[in-house]
Image (tube, rainbow, N blue to C red; front, side):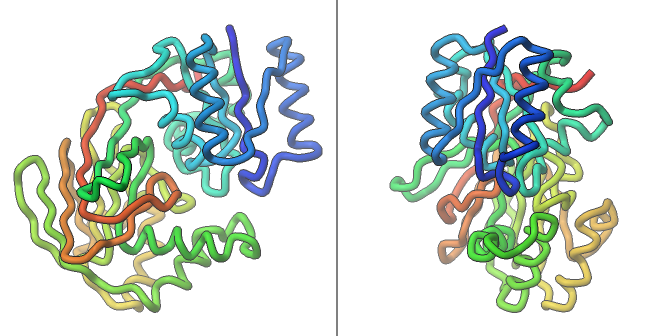
Length: 303
């Protein structure tokens, strides 16, 4: 099998020293080769993954977090279809949050290395976000997109990641964001049904986890053709702080301030532009619309 390790050298604190040697030794001893590429930045990762797919690579192993997975996925899809249907992905727990990895491996205790050569392929859904502003390009995502509060946390994280430890990379920005958090009037059209709500923010999910382990997509199924929607209703800072713990468990499902919905097509309309982030990367602002591409992405699961 033709494989390529696509490496984000800064992900999760960086790949260096023993981390790189362990990966290299495993690949050489198990696979007999270590075909790898160190990406310089996001655009370089997109370009390299697309070249790999178009030149017959059958498996791409991604060393990086949800943002790296997002970059690779967006390079492999054109018009909702794979450039190379034989090219499948292996995801790793090497980012700051590695939330999509948690969804793929939530029923397994095997080390991710073993999925490189012993795996079962499942075709999973990806979601697409399109913007009312024609200057903002559409984007595919595999895990979670947030609007409002969640995107504000990601923006704060970008400002603080140089000094915040990896284990606190989402908690600290969340606590710094909450004092300035505010609600916005949202109009949501979900499969033709309109909802008018006053929200702190919302999360559109295909994966279960986001924000370093929060179960924001607790009802999400990666191949059911539906989007899981988690809505944070208007609340004060004290209420929000107390509810943060619930987001790491299933307790939030019964909280009256947190609303769960599902749909295949979702339109989000706000009176003023509200910031958006996709898979941990800031990307555009409302108004926007979401849809699902059913079972188009081959991902290697542990066996």
